[in-house]
Image 1: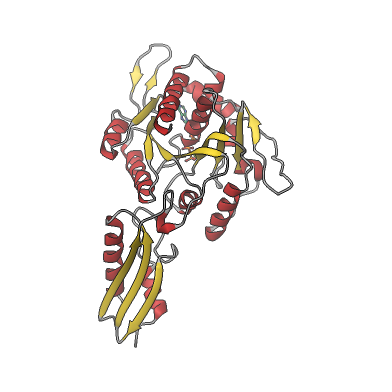
Image 2 (image 1 turned 60 degrees about the vertical axis):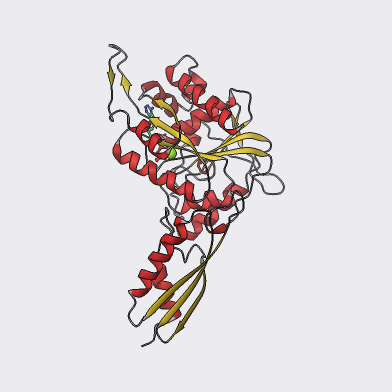
Length: 347
Ligand SMILES: Nc1ncnc2c1ncn2[C@@H]1O[C@H](COP(=O)(O)OP(=O)(O)OP(=O)(O)O)[C@@H](O)[C@H]1O
Ligand SMILES: [Mg+2]
């Protein structure tokens, strides 16, 4: 039995693009498959500056092909070209959002580490420097920005069918939470999520902005990939706690951005410590020094350390981020410091 093109493509579906959970077939990297007398030749095309990427893909693809029965010889040829500036993996060109100077993604590998809290407060802190700031909640499955800003408004659309952001505390906000009902489960799957996310990102009428902060869902899956391939990012900020499990996932997120040529602007360590309000004693609840070690390892700045803080959690739940609510709080001061560091890095 001779091996078929289809079997070859199926085997290649087991090969993941380095740093992503997505495979090289669905990425569109496979340009040609030729099978003659048990000898398979596969042609791939990819846009990358990182020599390790084609090397890893070639090795993985060849070994996946050799596992097929009736394959005598497997050859993987890779056509590599340099990606255009701002291009995502596989050469998909991410486009700038018209009128927006800098797009910053707030990401994490692990869920629940405080991305949305950080994104919200960072956006408010940037806004206090007289910059025009937008904040976009890209979490389709668990949007939280609408709640953190206490807004139940429904956005309106322009005549060209573009969605107009909601204004709150001087910021322009857009969230899936504005478009979905609290009760309606987001039942979008796979390719639908990709299309929905792209459409969502392209259809918001942001107007002129100095900074657009994107609050990403946790992980390094399809949604994150779609986002980094749709929008040209100035950089990414990675949120982690000092705990090892979070740091490992933060590293994965950093690798993902590296692979698609998006600079990692730095790490923010959240839930770094807790200071007891009555005794002033400090507790390192999730351990200490993790963020600093990881930042060194990734060769990126540790932008700041946010303590576990009851007022921060309460203000988020109440619908007004701590930076907007309490100017004198230590957490506010830390976010203001992080914001000015980011501005310096970007401008
Ligand atoms: N520094 C902090 N101090 C106290 N509570 C915090 C702090 N940071 C975040 N929280 C709380 O922890 C919970 C999770 O935070 P948040 O929703 O920002 O995380 P996330 O990383 O966006 O989560 P997800 O991965 O689900 O998107 C929230 O209830 C938030 O109020
Ligand atoms: Mg979140």
